[in-house]
Image 1: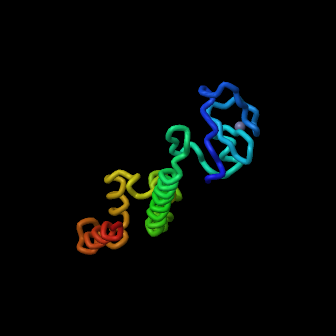
Image 2: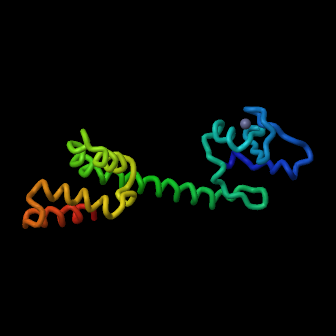
Image 3: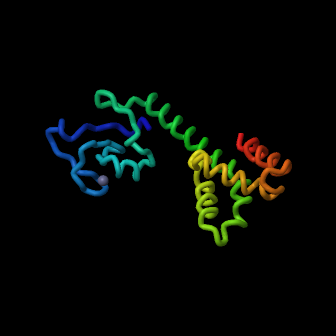
Length: 154
Ligand SMILES: [Zn+2]
């Protein structure tokens, strides 16, 4: 990361710079291997998303930027881990989705997002479906299965 440097902000530069890759006149200029790039193209050339970099007084605060990158990665890992936890619910819903758009949409959301993206009502509908697989609504078996669903979400 140290190899890339914020060259300057074009407003402050006497000379105007164009991106070495796409040729557009650029506002935020980055230098990498003696060439100047804009923030989109520096991403392509180096693989670093500089729009997340923390710049102070024209210099990249490497420590703060790396911390933010780690935090972002941690948040993404947490998101993915939560989506993976939905696997058993997705599997349960799958047979209901053939002619049921409602069930299909619930399953589709759970395949891509943590369960918090569903409303409490939507979650309770899945809990009811799950409980009904064991017995009639209000029966002991139903109630146990209903509670078991919420236990498994923890
Ligand atoms: Zn460019």
